[in-house]
Image (tube, rainbow, N blue to C red; front, side):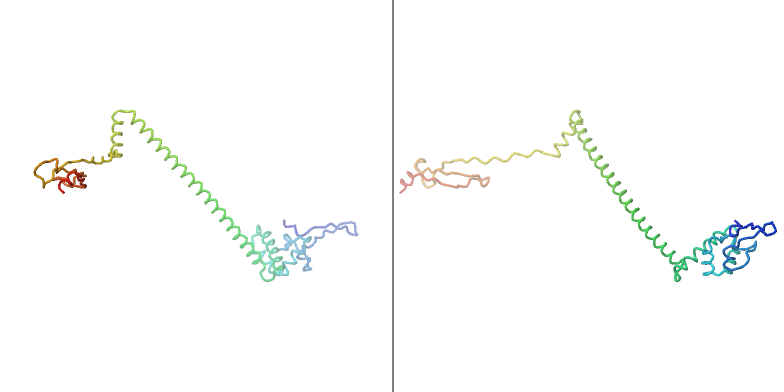
Length: 236
């Protein structure tokens, strides 16, 4: 990892030997300086990708990047360098908001997805409630039919048993008494009475009276008097 930013090249010399030269990292190449063994940029900025350090140097400056990498533990320096490259490229695309624009867009996307998730959860709860209500209604109908069957069975047993059947019959008689018969109309009666003005014969002064329903217990009220023509001519 420490030799990622630099590369050793063997170049043959004129004397027949070879020269061991080190290719500078992207930072030292851009800054036009010799890349030393303890160069803080060489492990993280390869000479094959000079545009990465160019963006970082333009936004943050080489000295600030070097200080930042030295303050970070060595195990986290690679992640820090990648983060600096990403932030520098975003700042170049959006000089005003930079990373905040990307963060805001991601937050809005998270809120939208959270709203969709809440809507789906609400639909799931609604369907579960409907299923529970339907199951409850089915149970109530089953209990209702079961109670009706129990009543029918109990009535059948009561009709086939002795004392229980009698008690059931008495209960039904009390609950549903028989209707009384309608009263019969009174029969009309015909009474022949004697006239009070005649003292001789009952046949000469007889008159026919038709009586209706008695109005009191003491006597009867005359409704219609049918006079005999012979008696009227006799008195005339």
